[in-house]
Image (tube, rainbow, N blue to C red; front, top):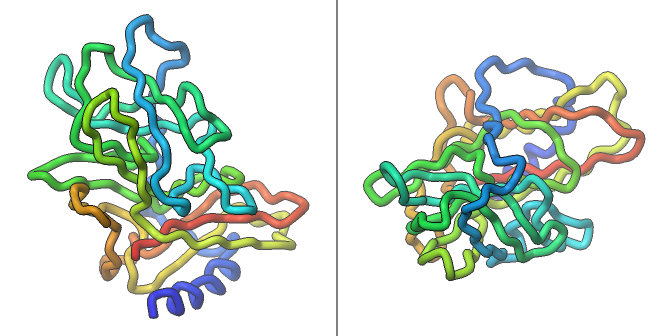
Length: 237
């Protein structure tokens, strides 16, 4: 039933090119990551745990990490424990990677989140992330939210997806179009979600949208190309 509903919204997304103007937006935050490696830093290894958890995806459905990827990991060091961003060091173009960040004396635990820009928070054993309702198009990049339970800095992180994924391929896009709107009337697909990250099958659960409709759409900004463009939209399940 959910899939049939989402397929109905596919038509809405295609017809809404360069339409509507929503005022309330939560954009992916631009994380301040080091341009050069510090002299003292912690390295974490990561891989994907399920084939539908993708940073970038090929036409054949192959998973890869991409340059510029960053994860956010619960880290203890100086001061209070908090989520800290770790930047991709090696592994772009593959499904295994290393990320660096924090001091080598820091301790990691609890949970890691991808992308780092989901503004994760921990409270009373629950993880909260925020899916933005507006972001910029990057070819082949899905922005699909993933988490990995963290044991220590030596144990590789195994990321698993939290959401489903809709793939939209649009051809003959008008030259004046600047954005694609994907709307799910009555169903929340952006905003804040609370997750029991310790659950073996943790997911973003489907919920009713807010009364003002601010969390029932996603806007993807883009510059039109000559050929077809493929968009990916994460969806709660």
